[in-house]
Every structure is written in structure tokens, then in C-alpha cells.
Image (cartoon, rainbow over all chains, first blue to last red; front, side):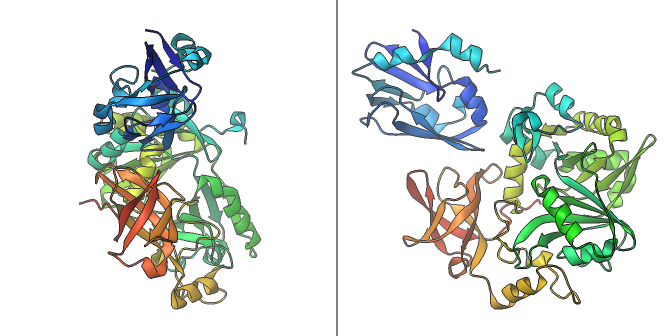
Length: 123
Length: 365
């Protein structure tokens, strides 16, 4: 599955009519040690650009945005319970949320992961 | 200031070699961390850490008029200060507002070293010049020299092993260490709540200070950045200019009565009369410590409420790595500043319960 990234440093992976969404390694590095993750509950309807939650580090607090409209169908409770997972595996097991999206056309305007990582490398 | 105008400390190249994440701070390019703010925080408490604090202002005040100039500008008594003594104090406006907080180190009868905040260095120099009626020599020695803080038990252990006379140096005392042909300034001060030293090396001794740091790295003392410095000072309830202190936040309101000597003979220090009135009549707002019932931090500017009524705002907040507890300092209506008072703090989309608690939040055992 192809991964695309947003200008606000989320990534999405499309699977049928659902997307999995997380934060890029670059975003997590900029945040430093993540200490708190809060995601809106399953069932929440989001418009493109709506905040679906917040992530907090020792240093700062940031909103997490949905790049396309959708409904939250699953929250990764493992990351909510242990936010440090984000620092360990941001592209993989530390995904944040799954959305069911009626209209995925907005994904086409996002940046493919390889291009994103060329611009925003991480260690 | 544009990015390309940022100053670099003499340790800039070393930071690069050690994997620092550099950020602009007070006009300087400074390490935020070397991998993990949390690990650097814990290392400072349990073993030791090194902070490059070369961005801080280092002002040399010398000559026959040096003492009287500082007596006029700093809130602490300079007369009676012994050579080798250091005092924390503030420079204030006439109305009591704060220009900066600083440490005065007395090196000799007519020889003082003032360490102030990097962002306020020019304001402090200007303030000194304005009141320099008797012609003390004021020189800004910040550029080119290196200042580091080495903090925590392992740092103290290694420093005192290499320079045994440092073991006899008490807190808030200063002196020199010899390193080859160089003499480095050392004070037993810091901004972490741990025991430790702050060291200043002139530009000619940059190699010497780097050797000291490399050696400390070999003895369980890690490199640390501004991120850990902030969470450490907050646990120790030490004020940060721009947060707990500002031109509109005076030292009495900020709980720094201990650093203000109101008994100086006329003319006293600038702001003395205003601060005396505040101390005698009471201040409308007071800095308090808050323990917050939430898994996350309250940020600067967050509204503090008492039963739905806004009574103040957070000045600094963090989830304390040492205490595993959300803590904050807040400037609140003095009516609601007593220990045990139940307040609320806005965090994110919600409101969390908070209790006024004594400071510091963390005290080393």
C-alpha cells in the first residue's frame, strides 16, 4: 500500500474506502519525546482539515489533522496508553487512527512518502 | 532576527559531532537535545549532564565604582559580599518590573562578573550604563568565551576528583580552576535543582573546556540541551524570564522576596521603593505552584479558574519527568494563592482540576 504525507506531517495509507493515519518520523522527531496522545472517539465525523486529536511532547502540543473527510472507525489505544510508541515506530505500529472515507480524491494531492522523506529526512 | 544572523557558540562544532538538534534561541543556535529530552532530564538527576549556556550574558564590572554601580542596579546587597561569593538577584525598573534576573559573582574588591539572560544582555548593559555615574568599567565578555553548566552527582564527583579544592567550594561560591596554562572561572551554581558547577572559559581556552567536557562524557555525564534545562528548572521552581518574570512581573509577585534587599541605604537600588510598597501592602497577583490532575501539561497562557471565574494564567507547565505529575507555575489572584486551594486549569479542549502546592516541586535528597 502506498503511503502519502501531508504538509502538516501526517501520513495516510489507503485500504479500500478506509485510511490509516499517523505522524511522520520527521514530525515525531520535531516534537521530541511524546508524552500524551488524545484522539477523538470512534464515530466522530471529520471534514478535511479538521483536528482529530492532539499530540503532546515535553516541549509542545500539536493538533493532528484529517487531510480528507471521514468517520473515525478505530483509535490505536496502544499509542494512547503508551505515547512513547510514537517515538519508536511512527510509520508502523504507532499509527493513530483509522478513518472510513466516502471521498478519497483528496489523497491525490498529497505527497508520496519517498518525495516527502527526501524533503524531510529523519534519522 | 533572520536565521543566518544566529550566533554560534565555541562548542558549535562539538554539538554537531555529538548529534545535537539545534534550534534558534535568544539569537543563538543552541542544542535543544542530543536525542531525548527525557533521558537527559533523568540523567541530570541520577548521574550528570553538560549544558552549553554560552548564550548567557557575561558582563565584567570593574574599578573603584564597580560595587556602587551594582548596589544601585541589583536588588541584593553588594557591600559585605566576600571575594569568591555569588549572589542571585534582579535588575528592576523604577516601578519594580523586572529587566532581568542575574547572578553577581564577586571575584575581588573591584572585580565583579555578572551572568544574565542571553535575550536580556543588551537591556542589562544599557541599564548599567544609564546608572554608571561614577565611571565603573563595564565590558561585555560574552562573545567568544564559552560557558557551560555541569550538573548532577556524577558531574560533581568528577570535577571534585580532578580539582580537589572544588569539594570545599560551597553553593553560591566562585573561584578558579587551573587547566594547563589556562585559568577557568568556576561557580557552584546552576539551573537544574541539582548540585553542580558553571564554568567559563575565555576564547583562548576553548580547547581546555572541550577537554573538560570530553572527560566528563567518559564519566557518566551526558550532553544535554535546552529542553531538559527547562523541565529541570521548572521542577526546581526556578523562574524563567519571559514566563515568571517580565517588565510587568515584579520579583515580589514572583515569590522572589528572598532575592530583594529592601533595607539598602538611599538611594538604594532602582525599583526599591516600589518593591518595598509591594512587600508591605501585598501584591494583587502571586506566583503559585500547581499540581494538575491531568496526564498532560498546561502551557504558558492557559487560563486558571476558581469556580468558573478566571483568576490567573499559567506561566510555565510540564509533565514532570521526575515526579510523573503535571505541574505548573501560575500567576494568580493572591486571594486564591494559599496552599491547598482548589483551582481549575484549561488544557486542550477541556478543564482540569488543580491544587496549589508548595514549591519547589522537586528537591534533591
